[in-house]
Amino acid sequence: MHLALRERARQFSAPPPAPRSSQRTLFFWAAGLLLAGDALFWTLYSQVQTTSGLVLLDGPAHDFLLGIRGPVLTALFGAVSAATSPLAMSVICVGFCVAWWVRRRELWRPALLLCAMGFTVVVTAVVKEWVDRPRPPARDFLLGPDDALSFPSGHTAGIAVFLFVLAYLLASRSGRRSTAVLAPAAALAGTLLVAFSRIYLGYHWMSDVLASIGLGLAVTAVVVFADAVRRGPARAISERAISDGARRNA
Image (cartoon, one colour):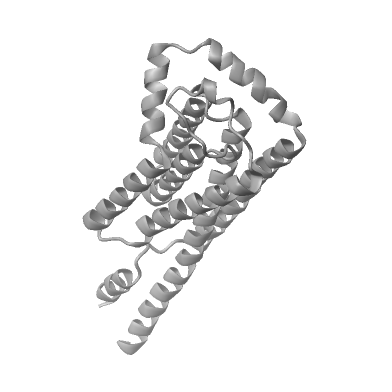
């Protein structure tokens, strides 16, 4: 009887119950990611406004990459950039989340990912207009004209949120130490690849993509916090259902 009650309570709550210590750990991670992301983004924003700090390296980095351009690298980074454009990432994210729901019959995690991506698209567009920073010289663009503003990079912010949030959702549910290490490492590597491609192709300054990584970390922090908050009530509901059922059948 007790086993049946436990099974019924587990089906009642969508996410798996998490120990209180695990929920506290997630809150700490959310706070750490938010602090790191905010610090990186606002530091770069301040330096863009005052033309100081890392912004002073934008020109030298841009000129260095102009000097190492070649057909193989251009083809590689051109493909990376095309596959991670805001439009392409929106289509990929929607398709991925629909497939996730169809296969797993789970709504919470794909909805978190989809909301995070939508929020990032809106915030990036607003910040671009707010900062109003011009792109590098148009003569250096390798994939044709682009009249959008430069700060932050929509490509980098989008892929950062997609990969960081996906890495968290996988690592936090797997229970495997290898996944907890490899998933964030792969997310960071993919983000850096896209960030580098945007500088190499001539469409962004180095400070643009670094600020975008900070934005991605901050959005991921919000996702971690929301997931942690939901885990607490889910555990409480599950335990209450088991307790009430046990009392009725005592």
